[in-house]
Image (cartoon, rainbow, N blue to C red):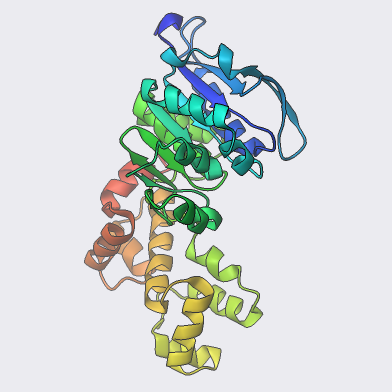
Length: 328
């Protein structure tokens, strides 16, 4: 690919933005160029802000930027904006919002990371579209922009050329998917390994896992139940058994469990087992039937049904895509 044909990626920053929201994706695009021959890098990039000059991120680190007035809106391949504490001030900047409104239709794809979704929404770019943001801001996004179909769980969402992603590190997942679309699966996996990313998460995966949801509880006894469940996926994890271990009635346990995790016990058990099976598929070449049994599924067919429900993919296809044992 000649340099003149390199895809141009534009990152837009604002005061009090989150450093990792743009630095993570930027690093992924840079690594895509690291093994290219001179003059044949697949990407070039520009870091911009409304007025240009140094922009102070929420961590206090300043980043030098070009002014949006000097950014050629007509030749943008990928447009990316992140989030951060300053995003709502930025979304109220008429000049910034107008620039996005004019630039977005000319770009091949437009992306937001974390709460950067609010800037795209302010520009009217998400009207009638599905979108996601950091889980802690989904309710606010829904309230401010009722014409946006807010998705709570996914790591990222693609709807007609506009990509929105969840909190912070989801920007890396998004960037890897964009790179896979452009350069192929093998190259995306090479970059993921260079970033020491444990797994390139598919967009439909939940923003945070069941174990993390349960560990976030301040109830230490409840956290112990969570650890026991993860260590005994092949055991009796019916509500009655879990309630007895917790010293509660089944009805009370089910109610408290849902309050603390946002899930019914049955749904949480299935998700824990799916996560265990996922890890095994990524890390081992064991037969799928054996993995299903170790994860606590009654049969391989039960595993397939759970994968289809939770991940919208079959176990075999998941392994083909994410098995880490492939030649590196």
